[in-house]
Length: 316
Image (cartoon, rainbow, N blue to C red):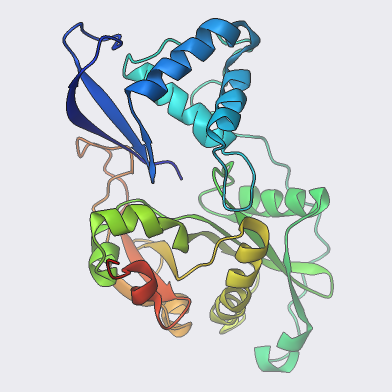
């Protein structure tokens, strides 16, 4: 997840594209700050190599800055979004696109998966839960199955993820039962932040220790008591290990949002999650309180007992 905060730093800038007397701007992307020297470097790179396209510029900039994720991969997607934000503020002028951009609201097409005739597993969950296979989605076939399940059966549909992402499939006798995914946490969330007790700088520095359960699907024809809470608990036991293996980043807390008009959150409660409040019905890009989005309950699950010490470290 990319978060930006603009702050005036009170230095006159001869290089601003907005006004001759405009103050220089500092762009904060999590811990990364962009100042006047960075803007000069970006503008020089655009002049020298802009004909090769925006993707080339973002890749070159990542290498100039050595800007990487914890797992060593360059932050190319974040860098492209950074360049777009700088252009939107009138601070740089990017070259023309080499290819047409996708239209607003575009969604990658997904196909409904071809599933075997659904048959409920026998008896109570305790009689067959040891035969459920919970696997991390890795192959192209697994990704297509996951995307198809979400696109076909989840009420929010399938959405192309951004940022770090792990997806899981739960199967019984090679037949899918459920799908879960985890991605970047929200940057600012009042009830969550009060529960943690961290400061703004601590949140900026420690947000990568949080993860968001952004999708959870039980196939609609399965009416198995306790299956959802059992899957949540089992998945969260392995999530920190998988996240560390893929992204070289430890985790301390998981969050999720439950739309209150649709669900009661009983499965999360049964899996020992904590409800800490609700959203205000705003999207993360709504700055004028105009979106009118559904109210969602905010649920949290500590992934380690010392999560507050990890997220709110004492000053050295």
